[in-house]
Image (cartoon, rainbow, N blue to C red; front, side, top):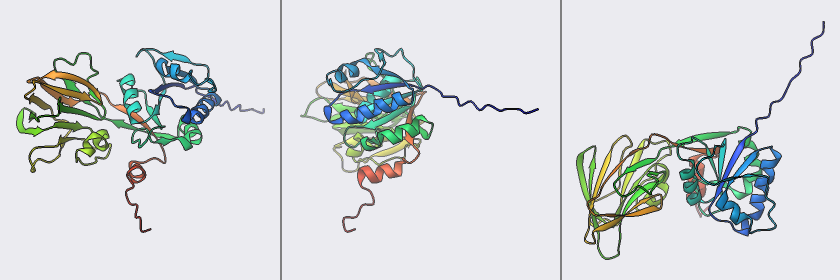
Length: 302
């Protein structure tokens, strides 16, 4: 008796959520290639409603069949962030603790998080949607303080304590695990995750951390003491901050989302209970990112 073996190829239809904060006709071709690739792979597409309104302003852009994302009540297999690192941070706030991996497609400038360049969208996206990618889990800071009820209290990059005016410094009393550490007299203090070590903390003189490092960076902004330097601490500690200043108010910023708080407010920082999953192509490594973005290893004499 002859047996015939039928091989059935099963295609998994992926649902892709797309986020963006702005649109410019200069990356029309990139978006068109992106949409064509997703449609060609049979993906279901949902797009942030505010971003759709921007895309509709370009009548030459052919939009795919899609559903709208109007609030946080959505699900997807993967999220695409179209823009720069600011858009990626916005996407992370929309994803929250859903565990949806995020792929950043860079139509901005430097792009450490959104590092898939516009000239590799077509090929790279096909590989990624066929499962040829890695997922990096990035830790977040969780913020607790009175007066931040309207602020999403998590930061993928950093939490910054900043003075409110240009006339005088602020004093930031800092304790680590309830042990008094230092009072920073400065224009501010940045507490950064490994992801945020290449952002605000870097401009304040802080070190760059590998994404998987289990650490935070404390980097003072324009400290009024020559001996005060950035500090690296374990990410399992609890950091307590209390600000005093002449104006009676200061700024708390979480990845650029800010709120004004009165002096004397106690701010508590600890590691969040969830992570943000970042999609990286198999040929994208942090070492390559540093070389490409910061020109490490480049010698003009060569």
